[in-house]
Image (cartoon, rainbow, N blue to C red; front, side):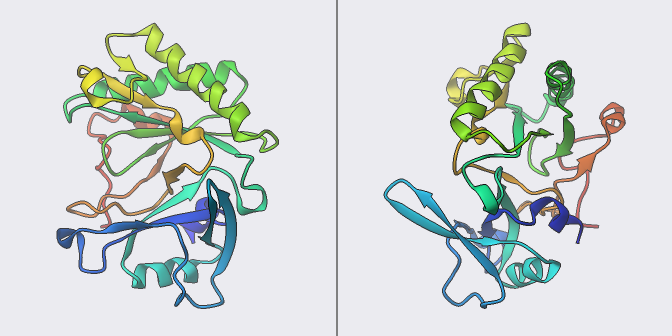
Length: 228
């Protein structure tokens, strides 16, 4: 039920591991033909065709997907009601190594400051993988091609403020040990891991929403919170 509050009403991409994470898995955007009729779907335009995504509406939908070997749930930044107009922006702070979490923390603070200055209300989440997500609600009235440049400008402002610690360079070879501020999720058809989703890693870490005060916890890491 907690995840439905965040993932509900959105096109979903699932990461399935029918034989467990040790055997490898795959991402699935299309709703399988054998999925029951009571699971809602939405047809989303894409280049060259369409994708029929699952739309989560109830906890039972998530239980069914778990029964299909789905471990991670990724959701669109726009709801099924208007798939071309996002109602949230997501910034992924992705460190180059496991020893850079302090820079991830500081980057989250800088993003919060810039988004506050824009009159937005940012929230914080561990990803259960490597870094942190800073997520801010937006009105949902503008298309992706107008929101993406704003997200890029915010990310670049952080990188330009501390260029030795942060970068918007997507190529890993060009990051040179800096934290990558991934703003590209704010483009049409991109997704972000849903709050409360498990991640397919040893110990079953969870993407957990945080209070901003928790950022000061010296024991905080992206994988601190696990299924237990």
